[in-house]
Image 1: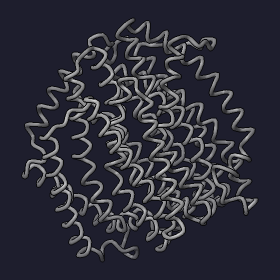
Image 2: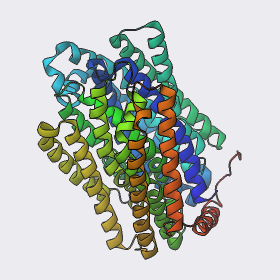
Image 3: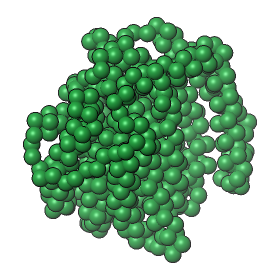
Image 4: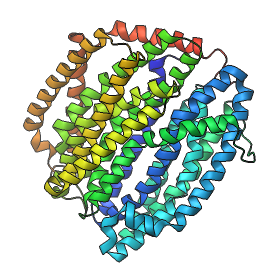
Length: 536
């Protein structure tokens, strides 16, 4: 399977997950708006999500995948299975201890870290503690899910790991439908949602475990032992855990600051959900596919192929995120109005959330480029350098958020996150260049400049059309008409951008065909020792 086809496989499954996630947020906005129960639920849910990114996705995508790939190269699938069981035993034990400790300390954690702004409202604080306690075991399920997803990605079985997150959204949508159908109060709706998160974590774990069994590996539970391989994993995973959770770290800092204003946490979450659509489809696809591809190429000695894969990934990111960023900036009001403004979600809510979304749009290319650049370090078993850059971005994010929040409230937090993301991107890019791990490609630079031009022209067209079609995008207009008008704007944007990008040389069909063919050759060279899909 070629590199771009792999991006499409993971991106397609992630798109499905993000669409279900958007449906979930739409129902959430109708049921809870930006009221106190929305703040409480999102504050409680952010905590297990933070630890999931720190100890699961970030750590294992960065540390486990290269070591698993090395085991496959050196000792075949049997060696990789043995290594996986060693890691599973230690991970299960550590997660159990961590979960018990966090459950006992939850009141202090909520008061001091998750939502210190709730301290003046005992009822709000108490509900947040209880919801967080229900949802925290989700971390355990998702950490084990992340490990098995890393195995599947290394074995070139991408679909099961990519499709698993859909089940979280499906189960939560079911809980919301039930709450709306029964007319449940906001507090009861939050309880339904909390238990649905826990149930979804167990379901996701079952899905990826089935995928691992289908790939030909069965994992048994071993007594935890710190073997040399496990010790090496921990050395790599600790800094990678911090680095992989950079977005969540910055968001939880922003959440702690935003908890001082009612509705601010929910407003940030609603904007986050929209920009997560392109971030997830492109960023997750690139990060998931690129790391095992780079790791296998480097371990096999294919240095030119590793450089090629890295550059094509950057090109892929810019090709898709530049127009997405421009569209989010220009159409933020229209997007939020059409998607959210109904029920408890008011016109005032639309103005606040749209302004946040526009700022997130400016940060989108930087956020996704991080996903394309970090594997250049991780595949070489260097997790410390990205961790240091993460520390710099966290300091910048904290300083800007604290400084700007008193003046521009939620928009200050979004600005801080976007600025921190771009600083991190620049540090990663320049370091890879300086070390010779990334080769400067003038052809790529020229194409990027032309893609910026195409995105700017597309934005101009959208400004003109959104003004002319504004009557069809107002809340009093029928929902179907609003959706059709927004869809037409997006369709015109797609035609203008892609048509102009190909016309001025930002991209060309011949280049895409060569990338697909060469990606297929690279994949074939690096996967000769792996079982193919369906092999047991």
